Length: 567
Image 1 (spheres, rainbow, N blue to C red):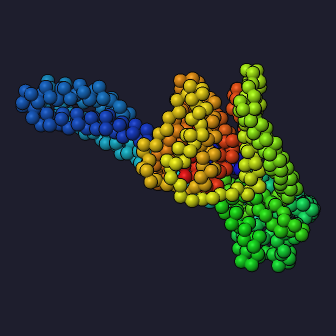
Image 2 (tube, rainbow, N blue to C red):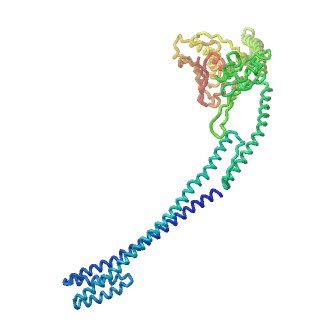
Image 3 (spheres, rainbow, N blue to C red):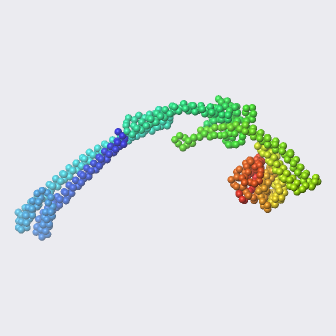
């Protein structure tokens, strides 16, 4: 039988019995009330009237007693409810009329006998009705006891049977689900019943069977997948090391063993921190993994210097059936960039060689133009002077480009030579100022030196030539982007224990979206009419950072720019 049917039958039967109990109780209560009312209203009043008439008869000499007797006689005539009471009342009425006409003792006795008969009839009626009321009460009591006992039995049956019949299968199901959660897919439910729980048990068993089948078939697939991943890792040309959440090495491929000098049997299952005590590469990897350093890692492998970039891939996933993130360790991947580094070195060496070789003929061209401009060798026409000036400008431009290429080759190769010493801040500013003053005057630009906030003996630890080179690059750009009668300010101010150098112009400015890219190599602001290599600011950044300083720009489009660095 279905649980729903059981509940409906049990609760419905109990409900109907309670309704029946209430109905029977109401019926008997109303019947007892009616019987009691009959006793109180009819028979009791007749006794009262009879008593009053007897008292009036005893005081027959009193005029008021006659009136009292007659009033009660009339009231009794209106309250005739019992069998024979009417006849007794009629006889009473007749005997009283005779007594009234001739007040003899015989007539008085007849009246008293009539009143006694009426009282007897009503007393017997009261006794009879009282017996009926008692019988009614006893019947009601029996019915209520019987139905109440039956309701108690039904309720007890429901109380002890229905919760058990519902909770026991649920407990069984919960335990089985717990077994399934613990990967015990052989668990089955056997419930000796039909209905909804039988259907639930059948569905659960079907699910468990499918899971068991899937688990058994999936184990083989998992092994295949594991072998596939292991083979893939082993055949990668990049060193790969896998660590679990505790920092133990769970896999390491052949390439990683080569570059680290480890033996697989000695590495697997060991803590990487323990191995790092004696292995330089593992120690370096752990340090870089914590510091997130982006520098290229140089390792001596395959009888040559090799270069690697470290990628750290964290392994995490959401817990099944929950929202907790489970940390499953990390994978260290060393991407071999040796080939690209070799190409980069070759490019850098080529640029450095070409730039160095070009400086000599370019210098010769400049010297030749200077000699031609000397009138001791002859007077030049205006056309010839213009041509020589054009050649000189092109020579200067080529010389600047070759200088930038040489500096960039130093930056790329990491061979920046710094001659760090204490240099006077005002001397640095004065040197850059003097190098650009003539160009500013020729273009009607007011070059302003702002060093008033710097005390005369203030020094910085820097490379003099490279610091002046950076200031000169800032000034050159500012002058190119300024118009006639504008100001360009070169200055320095103390800033949090450092010196902040700056070059400020009031030209076209730079859109804020280019501020992060402006110090990138070969980047030029779109729409810039001044040709260049796009290397100057990148070299400036490398020089300043190599000296331990910071560099940046403050600019808004249409409001000018301020380039600065601190050392």
